[in-house]
Amino acid sequence: MSNITPDPAKPIGEVTVVRDFLPAPEELIPKKNHVQVTMEFTQESIEFFKQEAKRHNASYQAMIRNLVDAYARQHQ
Image 1: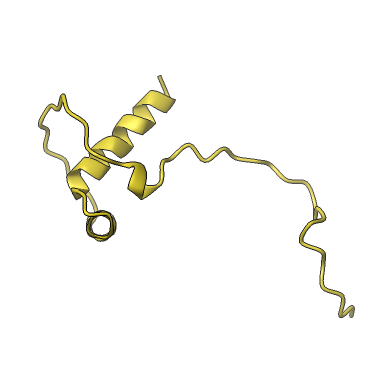
Image 2: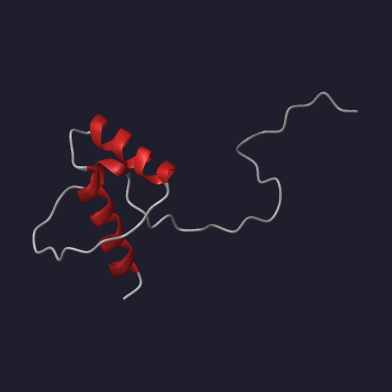
């Protein structure tokens, strides 16, 4: 058994880089031009967005709306 700590700057094997296209919660700020719809979400998702909205003094609905907008733009 080796007591050598691996160097974090050196590769440890083959790596696949996956581009993170989702914006950070603080980037999900409200925009205009809305269409009202009714959707169902898990309790955990809503709690996450409400906590993040509170931390950033924003609307959790606007954060969700902008997340969906960012996803749609990415896949157009």
